Length: 623
Image (cartoon, rainbow, N blue to C red; front, top):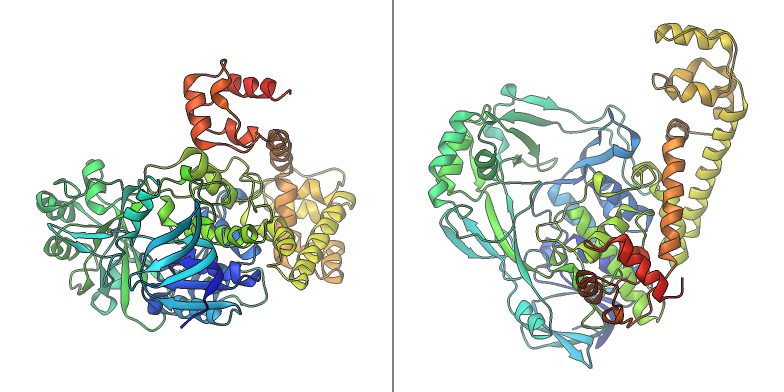
């Protein structure tokens, strides 16, 4: 049936589970991926898209670390867009519209081609524990499967309850049963759990829509891609999305169903995602708004199914249908299925170490929505880190932990462990204090060396990163040392309505101007000759341009990061007794004892810990 024992067992095959299984197996661990339905590996339960604001940076980081999400996103993309181009480069975020079924099939193909990875379809109801160590899992059929490390990535399936109006039924998502028993048994082991809520909009028949009444949203003219590897290529054709809006008539119909809405009648008491509210929540909270945007997103190349982004709802199906027919372009809409809300169990992530191993039970790891996050990207990132650390743990190696100055993934996990979350956690660029350093364009330079050291990124890939870095640094050196031709520059400045120059200066000084971009340098023959001889493509030139234009911000963030590292290097001894420090506030004693930060930097980021508390800790440790 399967081997008698594994190095790593992964429970759940969503985005977290797939990344966890792939990373553990690729590092050399004999791995078993267990799921309730092998036909729905890496299912896009909600919107058919990957990336977006801050999330695109995470996908680039997963790819740079040797994960598969970027590759699969490229292979299944039907549209590519770089969001926030009008803002600074720290805000630029890649996003792809995906072919839902192709996304799942490409993920499964990659997993099945991964040596050391086995599969099994069944429900897990308990963790086998001896002496506070996880040693295996128990299935609903009573089978015991043993493993050195266990990773739980259960998504929304733990006691999942689906709501549509005043109707509800058990389920992990539409058409799939919930997972029962595991929460109760984890509670018995000492874990605290809670309930969260998320939702999804109706899916409709695209043939019933009138797109002439909507605004077309096409992809980028020259699309890029997520993966830094050579395994994928940019799109050569794309499908458009569309935008329409609700109106007061739509809102009036929706209000008719409020008394039957589980959001308002008390049937749902758990917390939903603040930044992705349901349509009924939006019109209730923002009564003054006469309309809300609806994004009409195709589900793939060869399907007429359409995702109605912005119309997430748990209202009765008849109310959903009547209201949606009043949206411009939806007058003759036909439903594939109504929207619904789902409640599920999660475990507050303050019960974890930064490695995502639980503090209560050794060798047990949690990743994804079980930790209170929302989003495919956040889940995939946690799965990758959990898979790496599950492998390292049973090899007796130190855990792999990313700092807040090293990756959005580091920010994500640090926030979860030290701050916890009482609502579904979603990543934003504003959460990262070093976002100018953590750009989507430099994820490979930041993280591929670490991945290569782990054994995930190949030497060939690492060599390619070093070559591109050398080209970028050489180009910046050229721009800092060589002077631009005065006549050609003044011709350019006239076109830009800029003041004419009387003497030449370095290319970098010119490029640093807000109104000047690298594309304006096309007429400068010495520079163009350098680019040609050194084989520098536009992506390298773009990165060099960012480094030149934002050098002041970048250097400031680097200095701040160096200050932080001084505190990161001061480790708090394991088992340190905070209660003995009389100068610490009672709140500090309580939170430090509960969260057990590993370093002074981690302690400083805990809510309620003041600089004076850090000073007390410094003195107590002889600093």
